[in-house]
Length: 270
Image (cartoon, rainbow, N blue to C red; front, side, top):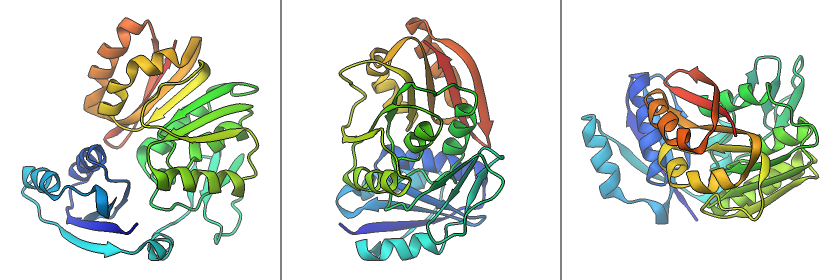
């Protein structure tokens, strides 16, 4: 399947952040940000141009559209990908980069239109929270796994049972490849569009977006053992109040929220 690249000239960082959140809700799978533009990627069959135009018009912006053939995606991505360092905790690089020094954990990622290279603020923030949680010998559910990066980090932190799901075929394929690249042994990649699981897990991670999290909140609650840890992300700062209100009836204890730009990740204990 080919993909569309939608280029939106926009210089305001806060506007780019909101656009990413809104475009993700209508099926866009990958994003590249620069000081002057946002590039968003979506499968040809998934694009609803009417929905796109409605969002663009809200901000009085314009956009251009081009087709990227499946076989050309890696070349586009490689030309824009730089290694990511999450403090001295995690380093994320591609296979064509030299090994990273001075980090506790290194992850090699090769995305195929999959969200989650560590560049985006939400993935970065989730990894910062993961540093504070004990994963040793724990079971983990990663909802909306994308490239599989968070599932891979969970295994590197000691998790011994990991279920990683995504609704998108590209993500399932890509996450599977990335687990092999990183020599993971305990990650089960599955295709699913809900957070419904057959058993509860000790740690749950949902780095996706506000609406999908709220739609799946009951499933996420059932997927978490009593006293377990849950991280919610893919959220804008203004989403925090709604998430706190929605999670309160579940009895979850809000441990902390970390912010990076306009984005947040929230950590609760069940």
